[in-house]
Amino acid sequence: MLHRYQTFKEVISNIRSNVSLEEIPFYTFSFRDSYSERQRRTIEREINNLKIKFIKQQMPRFIKEKDLFYNKTHLDYVKTSFPKSRKNYLHMCNFLSDPVSTPYINNYDIAVRFDDDSWFKAKIKFDFSSFFNNKDKFIATSHVHTDNILKRRETKIGFFQATIDYCRENKITPKYNLLAKSISTEDLELFHQLPWTSGNFNIYKMASFKTEEWKHWRSYIEKKGGIFTNRWGDLEIIGTFFYIYYKDPIFNLDLYPNQYDQRKDNQSIIYFKKNFIFRILSRLKRKILTVFKLLFIR
Image (cartoon, rainbow, N blue to C red; front, side, top):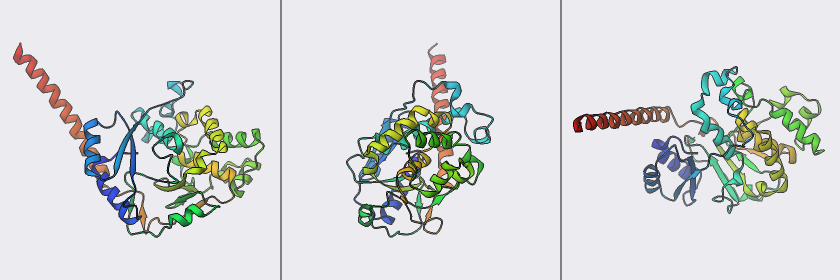
């Protein structure tokens, strides 16, 4: 997802050179209200073999405005970091939690998912062919983490119960031992110890998302509405699916923090703030000029 377009060229160059992806086409996705058509053309012109695609903001009709995540102000995460202006983030979670929802990457065997501030400190050794031919691994990730902070737990409210219900309704015993144990004992704390992928740099085998099992799971999650009401993210939605159906599906590259960082640097934030201020000033300038012209004409 494209957000910090000012530093995106540098991020793309860094990933291509350090992950041996020089000739690979890159697709980046954004919402139409985030960037103008002119900005899109400029970025595509400056970065070789890159295409920006605008995605639709689709939300299930049964979800009401009052139930959206940003209205749950009793949660610390919402109070401090999730105002209504971040509504697009919920649409982003919805989009990223179904990798085969876009036709642009469906024809590829492997897809690399990264953020617009992902940053490699050195070249990494990763054999794409070996990963593709490994019958036991379906996701490779820069590193894994657990739900050891409140923010992460507040974005998974209701998700554990939904997972329990799914497994019991379909008479499934998860293949991944830790998930199976947490469900059999209904132990939420154990569930929070599951290793989740980083999301900032994930490598997916696309065939995994074209199975009937995935379609069934993703449809179930969509009907629950938790992506929009509880900010369920793609990491837990995709990760739990693989933990349900596969014994040990994740290949942890263990790159963080020596070879990889989740944030390029603080410049990304600074550039974004500068851009935000610049846009506000530009709009004010246009309004002032408009008023001046009207007064002058009168």
